[in-house]
Length: 445
Ligand code: PHE
Image (cartoon, rainbow, N blue to C red; front, top):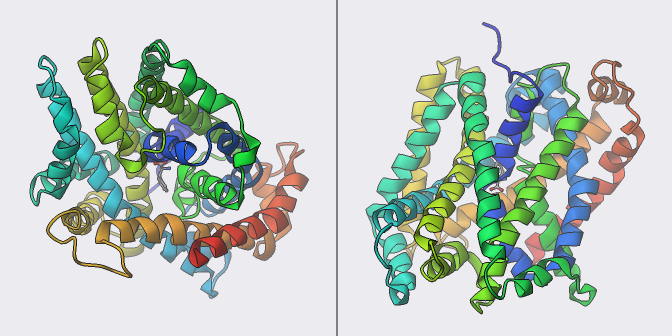
């Protein structure tokens, strides 16, 4: 049977941007900007995206498209009978571990969307927003039910395949997502007092830059671009041969960054206009934003819109994570896609249920001093992704034959490959050193 493929440049782009744009942009990015001094953090972040992350994205695509296989098989093909395929296995574990907490936040989003629709015509009680959030996340049943709905929805898309599932739904959802975030941004920018939020995002204060800001920026760039766990290897395996991998990577990185900036401009001016500290942290989107929506004209509609945005962003990232595991299971066990997705969805739900319960009844259960939810989050984002990224660049830069890398980079010599030398230099030297530093910092911290 012929392996499924994306249909062309736009198809590849919506799927990869779908993977990249997610809770990382809407929830993690604004709050990290808040905690790390605003514009200066953004500049460092941009530099990392362009210099380090872009070449890593190209490398993942090269591995995937060259082998047309899942992340584990890809390494087995390029490096038979060596331990390199462990990178793929770790990637599958990382995908699973991200899914185990990300789908819970997806469930919260569904709950909030549902509630914001129900309350479309009533006035929310602002004073109880915080306790509403706590009651919801700590309840033993409700968030799990929503997580199941969220997983089923995402699993359905993955079951439909690459072109007829992931690409088709991303094509519908992604343009809509960008449009909505622009509308939300305009609403936020026209609030009285919005200037302070804008200034915070565009006026760099370089005295705020220190090593921990730099490290936070690199970590965020990794997470936001879905790097280091084989997501782009898997998607790369579905990219048609004629597509220019550098162009796809560049467009993805730019769209993801643009979206993060739009999200920042949609959120920060509102936060400042209401005199809230930008350092509010993880509760920002579920507690602070509903408070703002409750006080602005047409706020109820913007609340619905915001949770639709959050939902779409989360779904298109979760399908890419599910695809990493699905491609592996279907190709390894030679089972039908729909059965593989079904079983994976069930396992994800079980793990996610534990991480959801760890917010409430199981909050005393600790793994290495962390709740189950935080453990999955920490294990994937802070350990498995940087580790995976490090080994991927070492693999492409030092193990793979340069001629082979060049061949795939230039589409079998049909593209000029002007940037190849710069790319290769970064992959061999700059990226490994930079990631090693971040990684050491993260474990030593
Ligand atoms: N990039 C996604 C986000 O920003 C998260 C993600 C990480 C998705 C790794 C896939 C792989 O939310």
